[in-house]
Length: 478
Image (cartoon, rainbow, N blue to C red; front, side):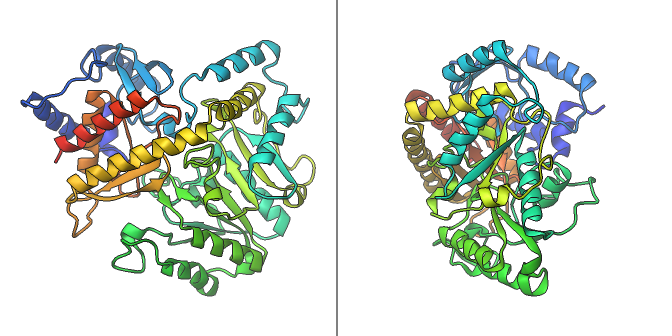
């Protein structure tokens, strides 16, 4: 059984922790040592260490942990571990907590629901909350046409069902996806995902009829040496060339795209690119599926990221922040597409569980009553400004700052000229921030992107504290 540190060392998503810890210790011994008032013990503390030993004996190392602490409770944007250390949370459970930890409305609605009904399976005996939330989601998803929504348990399930529906509707098999995409860890989901290690390594053979093309990435443009001024659109030629040399567009059931690549490094697709995808789908009778699992529910400053472009998708998949921490995903699409599948062709035992639906209704209530989209844009401006300030201060290793609204990230490189990914320095920043009381996550094909997924209703003081810690962590590894 490998140790926790060995697990992290073997996982390409994680920094070399043994080197990082020593580096951080040396930094913190210096005259500029900084201490957070929220941190009470060493990190990880003794209780977290003890639980990690139990964890190693009880659960497989394949289910890894990005951070070495154990949570005890969390409220809003603050999380307290079992040792009493409190952290500002910029991870949000990987984008699940846009309304924050333990939102009061959500907690109350779930308590009420658990006393009335916990499960019947909607496919056996339906219940009203399923219909109520479906009606609200249908009204929110872009498109001036009749829609239908079905509920599942996760983002991967939502993507798989969207593909099933598109195949049934078109009578075709092919699926086109993009580099830097993440669509889940199921067989089809990981086939569609564009990263081998850790998501696909050793898990083949994969599903057939999935075709991948390069995606827009101005900082590492697949067609030009320099797209620093913004995407020039040349990369759309990869889609057109694929129709000539890879797959007949008449055999494609769907093109599946994230408006902003999530795990791929927070890479926004330009509006014109999404517009061209819409045109291509219309021309060839292809279903346009927009994966809003991470981008949805306010993460980019609009309820759905696709709204920035004005493009109307045929099907939208959602999950993550839809239910504020409870497992809920959805497939929402044009009625003429969704209604084609025969009765019984779609379903899941737990999908649309009454407790998760109650949470989903509470999330929408919170967005409306607290003006969360307004707050999201305010948070996005402050975060992006803070990251650009850091880039201006450290242009040699902060190669790119990008994102959409509060879905922001910065990419670290060894030097500005070569743009060689600097995963090691990225990990040191995450660890330095952890020691000061801030939770951060990495992303990107090379594990060299620091992304932020703080709750949209984070207080101004908490946001300032988190951004200050992040800045000190960056400075500490300069």
